[in-house]
Length: 527
Image (cartoon, rainbow, N blue to C red; front, side, top):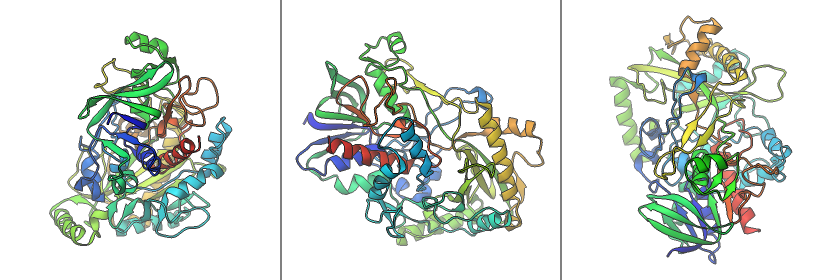
């Protein structure tokens, strides 16, 4: 079969949702294209498997951005999921929507229908929260949301440290108030990761009207005149397929703009430099790249009840494997970032501008640098950074990865806020509640001078895995997509992933991307 009503390019969170919802109608045919595999691997189903996936090419595109002046010339690292489920197969499974006002800002930027009251129904539609339904939560959606069950003692000590330093405790970051620290709810079901694929695609792979091509890459969107008509494929299903209704891109903040440019939609001069015929001059394709810049501080610990590299730590893991295989409970259900929260750098602010992820082990350089012994870590990230990067073509070869420039900490305001956040985080981690775990602070021990701290931060800070914005939504002429997610300048083409966000939200981006997929599918159905 080489003709379908709808073609969805990219099996990440947005693509899984759109494909599943469109194929609910037995009268339409849907083809979902994914470069990776089915996302059913054991290592992805075990929540703690993220520790092995994050630093390796397992289910992972493993992007390496260009060197950034703000990071003292370092290239950084951008792990992104490569399987059905996309980055929801390799993330920390935290269910966070962001601040309600983030969506009102989207609306006020010229995107009617994207305010908080507009998007809330789609969050609720997707959500299957084990706490039950209420005004802000859904209980019947396909995405299983639950309280974490690993519950390391040190995560409770982190909350007690908050009480000791006058930080609010919050048991629902998606409730009426975001501010405070607490334990994250997670996208898990019966002790397994509930990726977007596990929620939306795996239960429906036998639908006769849903065709899934894994191990297959999209090389180019094909056009008949001004209308997107098909996709040229490489990999396992090499060839050409056509769409009678629409093509929906869901490759994420790096791959969606990359495919647009390969297909002739993007900055005209840049495309012509690479010998690509211009279908539509869209100068903002690949621009407006935003991400949460993040710094992790870590402590060695004399206690051995956290994850760590030791004989006792190995024994604990082996026991955890047996328990997980038998009961789907225990140590391997951890997200590692079991606790965290949202705080303000200044009390006068109307919403948090910083976020914590508290990790029950030492996390260094995306787990690419390992440390003997035990310890704990804490992320501090800037929720609404001012710095902007870009995505561009390396060349016209679709098999080559895009050029990614994050430009982290290029804006002084981001650096100043990260320094403030570091000091607040250190005060929290030095509270008495964590005293029995603290042995030695890594990298910043004894350093209190801001100039020295700044250099350490620039040497070690990097992404917390939330790139967005490269196919900006807006009502203005230069926006890449309109508020109906239709690509401007052509017909029959939409985008349903985090690349459409005009501003990064103040929180983790997987739940909002799933919401975008739900809303996109609904808009297509009602067109």
